[in-house]
Length: 89
Length: 499
Image 1 (tube, each protein chain N blue to C red):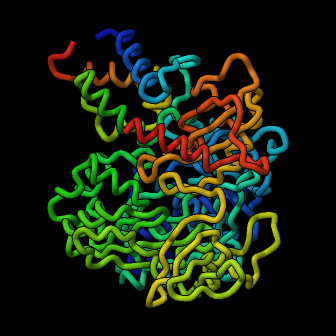
Image 2: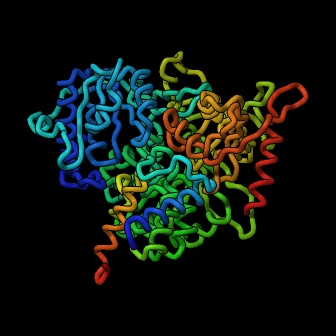
């Protein structure tokens, strides 16, 4: 999956599941943690969504604020994890 | 803690995401940090703010501040800068310990001259070289008295500003001493630290461990409500004592398979901050028959002042568990509306007097020997037990965090689009949500994200609203006051339809 596809699916998820379907003002650098868009509970749901959607497993060590601070960081995290899957593209 | 550094220097004192420290290492690091702070002008009776994620360094810094006879102020690591700026100004801190980026962001304007001690990840600018040059030898005893300020915890205030709860050495030790004795904490124990360090639950984990020469295991903030991570932590780290808000345990039961955990290492499970729903508690109690279960109760102003040990839980019994009877050397009673003493079966406001009652709010008159009125309505049960019934004001609990709805309303009111606002909580436990009802001045209504952005500049994350409902006018009662009950009913109907 391309980086843009990953980003778009993440953005759709956040807009529809957390922001009542309204993505006005939501972009790659929106501070999701600082704005309380992602709280600890929402991160858990998001991790489940990512693991189910992108087929990657997010290790404990990767659940860090810097990896979830905005859509760009989460996208990067997924791209990095996809690369580390044996046989992945 | 210092005595264990001499008696059991190699025993593990604290394990964190960054490192682990034995009692000797923690002692030495605390001495170095204390000297570095002293060099920055920190003296006895000063206040030092610590704005850091949980780590062994953070814990050592708390110890270091106390060693100078000063008081520490733990700040929520993800607090917005504007809020932190306000807190540092109000508390007139002598120094700030934080990361380089946060120093640049917050030590501006009137705070530009506040000294900082900077720590950070690899490659970040930090004061480690300076720290290494500081001596790690013992410092002279600062001669702190039991009544001296040890730390300040910031809680939500109804007037739109946080309140600083000032707690003394005696306040903390009266509670941790009681708890360590009740649980017979020994040097073999491993205490899980789930609560953030700016939250009063963490006082138990750290100080009960240090009083007994035990180990405290820090759980990173980002794992706080990640059930799989928390269950994994239980399996790998094998803590013997757990203390958290019930929400965390509920989540571990619902989404983490906590009930299936074979051979739990825990011998005691403590919870506080909100009611634990009976059914999941019974399930957990049944799964772990060997462990003790204690419901602890107390606002930040008194720390834990009552407790109830959960023993037999009859199947089908849905009675909420009581908050129990007095502990920590405190005296508690229920005061009726007419000011009398509530008798068995009657309700009243819970009052607390004794060694855990705070020194007072920062900037306000000292509490002195006055009992503290909790604002919590309780029913007097048999055997001096109390049952929590509700609040007498607009303070609510959201996943263990205390929230004054008025503080959020004051912030929302400052938004140019809002002419009137009311904030209410829907749901409870894990499902608790902050709902803002807003009467909008503008043609274009701000999106939820824009409202969150507005909140985030002034409020801690747990007080940012989850939903916004726009109304053309707020419902009013006959005498013109906002009809909060009508709004609550409307909210219940909507959320019922969704579930």
